[in-house]
Structures are given as structure tokens and as C-alpha cells.
Length: 362
Image (tube, rainbow, N blue to C red; front, top):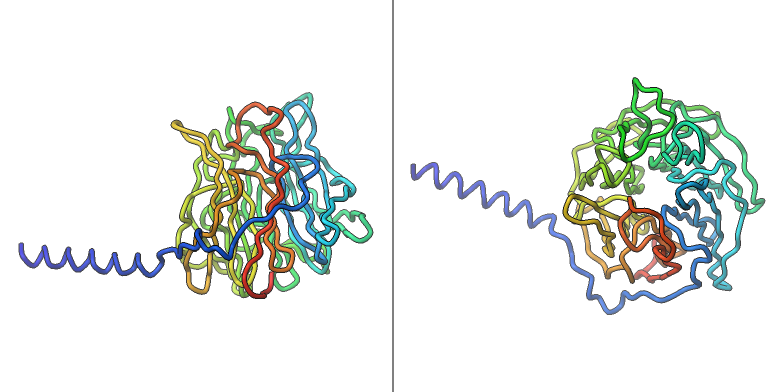
């Protein structure tokens, strides 16, 4: 019996040491990190996505209102004059599109339309469209469609190829053209590679944990998929996960799961800077509560560790996030969890900026 007790104590000690190795660094009270205000977003919305190109930020998408098509907005922010400019809408009115940047162009994949009549009315109808957007010319070029229809995937660029991973679509073995919170949906781990030079798609190794509404980033040639939603695409019918998975495109290999998120969440904004992935905002809902997050946390793949930064100015989900230089921008979003009837005044026009220390690469 004594041996058994000593063995158990040793196991506990080892577990405790392992836990300490990945404890987050608390920088929430760092006086050198603070939020400042920038030009408010002209059309407050949720389900927005942000990228930066040529020292400008592009805020894209929007959810809109039940009974109407998605707004599919594209706004350009220029930090020099601190002004917003409206650009041409997405060619297909979708929300929850995947997007990434390569060679000064923005690439869009999939998304969900909102049928305003007929089959699937007011549900989410996944599409397979792919587009290349030239911010300078403010023009779109249609690309080879994805091999399958899906929305709320992530897209990342590594080595001149784009990987579209995860997402959600209609349930197989049904005739559904759209899904909603009262019916089934298929959450995906599918991983498809798009080659812009050849305009072709190739299926790659599937993500171990199928999910949608995830966060992501690329560091040292590897893709990290963070958190997100399992079980369904609607927050009212799903659960958040804290799982972080690493994909090596060069080997077409998924590695061991990484340090878990501090707070499991989905539906927020993200960006990568100086070898770290920034995760901002998000939402959660269960039988006890529905909430949006103020949390701003970073994941460092080299150290396999999470750090806690000063919270966002307000709790939001569906906020657009991007770096311009070493300044982190968070734009708009809905100031509560999703899944409720659309109501005016629930999205914020807030546009806040935090300057990070030192220089780095996005």
C-alpha cells in the first residue's frame, strides 16, 4: 500500500511540473500595452473578417438580418488619414467565408448564403465559390470552385498554396440546401489545397478534429487551427472546443495536439504577428448562459504556450482583426453571443488599436 501511495504522489508531481511548463504569462496589466481609438467602423456588424494588404486593413463580410441577403461588404481602412472607404461587395452575397492573403491579393472561399425564399429560407446555404480580389483595381476574378460546398472554414497560405480547412455544410443523405439551428449539419475536418498558379484543387490529410468558426495562423511554415465549434455550425446547437492542432503542409501531416486554449471559444477574430497568433473576442452559449468574450490571448508555437494580454475594450464576437505593421486592430462585432433575433444596436462601431513592442513579421 505504501508503494502505491508513493507512486501516485510521484505521478501527481510529474503532472504538476508538466502543467507549470505551459502556464500562461499574464501581461494583462502591462502599462505599455494600451488601446487607443481609431476611426469608427461605418456599418457596425458581426461575422466580419479582417486582413491587411499593403499597409491597409480590409474588413469583409457581415451577417445582416434575417429575411435579407448577407451584406457581403468590403471596407478598406487607411491608417494614414484614419479613414474608411467602401469597396465593391463580394460577388456572391455570403457570410462566414474563408479568406487569406497572397502576393497582394485577397482570396475568398465558400461561405453561406441566406435564402430569402423557397427551400432553406433563412437558413445557411453553403456555396463552393472561390474568388481572387485585387485591392488596387477593386476587382474580382472567379477561380476554380472548391470540391465541396462549405462555410466557416479557415484558409491559410503556405509556400504559394492555400489550404482551406474545416467548416460546416448540410448533412449528407438529405436533400437539404441549407441548415439551421433546428436541424442537423455536418461539421468538417476536410483539408483541401488550392494552387493559384494551376487553378486546381488537391485533397490533403484531413484535420483530426473537425470544427468550424475556428481561429488560425501560420508560423514557421506550419498551420495552427485553434478552438472553434464542434457538433454544429450554430452556436445554439454546438459546443466550443479548446483543441489546438498543428498541420505541416510540407509533410502533409498533423502533429500531436498543442497546449489548449485558456478559454474554449469560437467566432472571434485572429491575426499573426512576430511568431505569435492573436485570438480576440468570440462567443459561447450553453443551457446556463450566452456570452461574448473580451479576452485577448496569444499562442506561441515555439514555446507551446498561451499568454494573456489586456482585454478588448468590450466583449464582442464576429469582430474583424488584423495587424498593420506592429499595431493590432479590432473592428466592430456583436456585443453579445449569437443565436438571438437580430436587433438594432447590438453591434458596435468601435475600432481600437494596440501597439505591440518591437518589430516583427505578420
